[in-house]
Amino acid sequence: MINKDLNLVNTMNDTKSQASIESYKFHHIDTSKCLKCEKFSCEEACFRGIYHVINKDTEPKCIVLKEREDRCVKCHICTTACKLEAITID
Ligand code: SF4
Ligand code: SF4
Image (cartoon, helix red, strand yellow):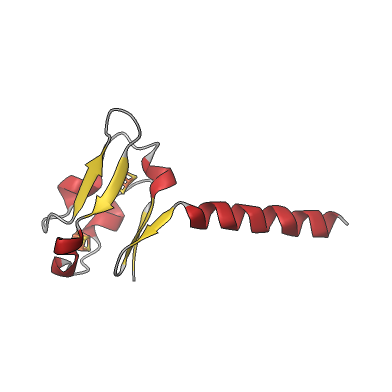
């Protein structure tokens, strides 16, 4: 019974975390992590200008500028710079 309950909780957590991931062509941002962000390092780190953080004073959220996404060279400077590990790149 405990295992069954645990599985249900795990499933709910998976669903919750997946719900906060915004996917672009090959960038994926866990925007629930952006809500806790104070440094917005992604914007500065990407020399290709691929990220923009909106609502910095209220509910920060990193977005990928779709028209720039293909400029990405997959250097992973951004994934290192984002200490909250909100960014994944395929
Ligand atoms: S992607 Fe990372 S650095 Fe950028 S706003 Fe979100 S949490 Fe902050
Ligand atoms: S991998 Fe490099 S080029 Fe691509 S978004 Fe991150 S910092 Fe920018």
